[in-house]
Structure formats: structure tokens, C-alpha cells
Length: 429
Image 1: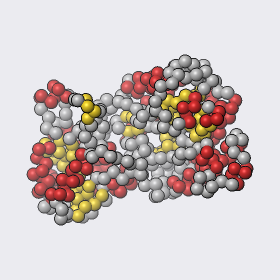
Image 2: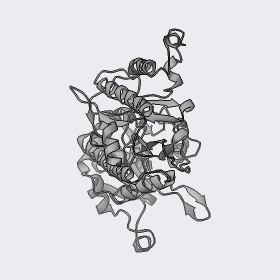
Image 3: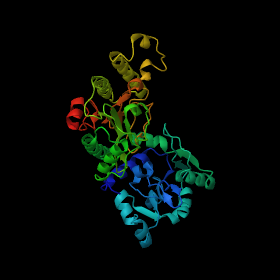
């Protein structure tokens, strides 16, 4: 891993919080992700299952965490099962966690090699009544691949059909959505790395550069600051490409007079950042571009103030829609008749701003969080309004990551990333 070690106290507390929500005499199992094949002997870079990482800090394949707080045998109340390491593996793949290192990383005292798991699981299953399985129930999830977790669940339910089954996901959705201070510091680190990349790009961008060259500038700065990758597939969208919401080809030349929409974030220690800025290729906005940009920025600033404890996510978006409607009227993109005759299910502003304003953020870019429950302090949300005008050949989106506070306005984790028009123009010139 490129990141600095994380205090094990975070993971000890996360497990304690999870165990407090479990049913009496129940057991929970969490599996690592697979290493996914490409072809021949090629594989995709390993990405740890975020739930296992959240509860254990273990960041390698073939790892399993078992939690059984009511187990009669105290040493089996928390167990890590790991792939056995040896000198041969160390030479060919690099060092894996030893039992001692696993304890230092996670705080879990009992560590077994994976080949012992089936035998020990049999003992544990004779002692528990309910098993928590870990299903993916995120509102954006659309998974077609059978995961290691899926295979384990099949095996478990087939071998132990008489046990009651419960779901880990609702517990994790609530726990993971409210961040510990250590987590907030890690997200701040990811945002700070993103800032470095953005400042590099402001200095680099000029007419004639290619979108993929800008992507490379970001990646250079991310890697040299201990980020292993983009937190999500980057969008470097110049000109009309900005009006394609998930444009990821990044293969066009940036032309004089155009704007470039940059939706980019670094990860750090598996935690995400999520930034959007829109900058002028030539280093200066036209008056029309500036007017649209400032309208989006005003909506972002006012929307941010609404992110306080108790806010309802759906109602918040209705209020942001009213802000955007007012700005679009001012820009003469809508008129009063458009608003008067709008479809309540698809308001007039949706013609120019068709996506949501905010989502949870953390270990996943679209992080865990139950959207039908009120917002709480220490949740992290994006704020990302936009105006997209294909007829004029540009789109503007601006996005920051903010932490909801117990009182007062949210804390902006991207407060140091330039956003005002004159800031952008001064740095580019």
C-alpha cells in the first residue's frame, strides 16, 4: 500500500459499533473481494471490499473477518482468516500479512490461516443461532458478477440451512455514513491530493492540449502524493463533451475559447474525494461563460448551507431546484411560462440540470447512507449543481465535499481548491 498506516483504534471502534447492533447469539462474516481476471494471466488491480476494510483494515485478497460477540470461547469473538504467507509468496508477490502484522493492523487478536476456516466455522455455527450475510444493497448497485461474498453465502446457506439469516447491510449503511474523525482526516488527505493535481492542471492547460494529457497531469500528482489511483473514472470534458454527464473518453483536443469540465478525485487509503471544476482553455472566461459559472457557484453555495442535521434528502433537492430555477430565469434559459407550465415530476429546470445535487461520500465515491433518513452530523456529502447548454457548446458543474456539523454550516473539505472566477483566471495567467 502507498498510504501511511492507519490507527487500529478506528477499526476496533468500527467493529465495536457493528457488534452493538447484532442480534443476541449471532455471527457475522465479511469476505474480501476477488482479484478479477482480464485474460491469459492478466488481472485487474486488487480493490478491497470496503466493508471488510472498514471493519478490519485488512487490504489484501483471500481474507475473511468473523464477528461473534456472544461466542462462549472468548478468543473466537473476533477472528481473521488470512491467506497463509511464506518465503515463496514474499519473493513473487511481495509480503502478505503475518499473524502478528494482522493484529498490529486490525487489533484482531485471533488470526488463523484460511485453510482452517471450514473446521472452525463448523464449531462456531453449532454455537450461534443467526448468521449475518453481507449483501450489496446500495441504491446504485447493479452487480452482474458473482463475488467471493456471493459464493460464500451460497456455501453457508447450503451447509447450514437451519440457521436464521440476517443482513449486515442496513447496519453498515448507517454506521459507514457517519464518519469518525480519523476517517474525516483520511478524506481530507484525499481532497488535499486532489487540490495539488488541480493546481498542476491550471498551470498546464492551454489551447491545443488534449484531454488525456490533462488526465495524465492529475495522475502524476496523485501518485507522487501516495494516492494509488483516481477515486473514480475521471471526466475531462472540453467544449460540448461537458454536456455528456458521464463522458470518460477524454480523447479530444482542447480548443481556444472552450471550457473544460473536470470531474476528478484522488483516493487515499481507499477513501474517496470527488471534485468538479470548470476552467477556460484560454485562461479567461467569456462574459456568457462567466455568467453561467457564477450562477452555478451561487446555487452551490446556497445548497451547501442547507446540509445540516435533520435535513431530508428529497426535500433538499426540491429546494435546490427552486434555486436553480431562479438562476435559469436570470440567464434567460427559462421564462416564466416554462415554469408556470412545468411538469411537477420533471420541473422546467431539469432541461439544464438533470442530475442530483448531493450524495454521500467516503470509502465509496457514492458512499453508504440511507437517503430516506434525516442527515446527521459527520456525514460527508458532495454538493454539485450544474448547468448544461448544448446549444451554446458548453456546460458548467462545480462540486465540493462537505462535512455536516452539529451546528452551523458544513465544513468544506475542498475550501482550499480554487473556485472563484478571478482565482481561476489569475492562476492560469
